[in-house]
Length: 75
Image (cartoon, rainbow, N blue to C red; front, side, top):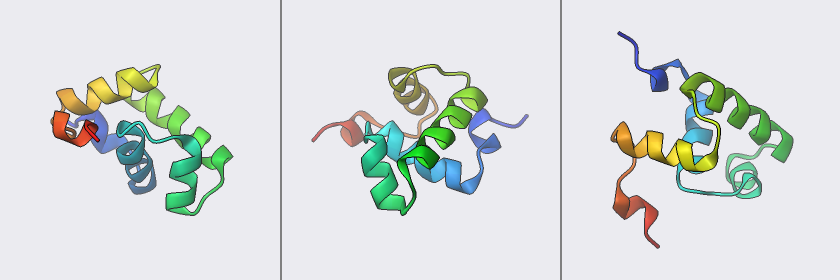
């Protein structure tokens, strides 16, 4: 059975990883060399594919799937 995270494209996975760390769209765009609008589009597709509807749910998904630990979230 394919995990939901495996349905993401490599670029969506890059955006997911940064968004899971509560990075702003502007920060993600700068770090990945893309426009803010492109980041917004990726986030919308990621949310749809993973069945989440908010940044908080995205973080919960990442923690639940073992993709992010509490240490990753602390400054």
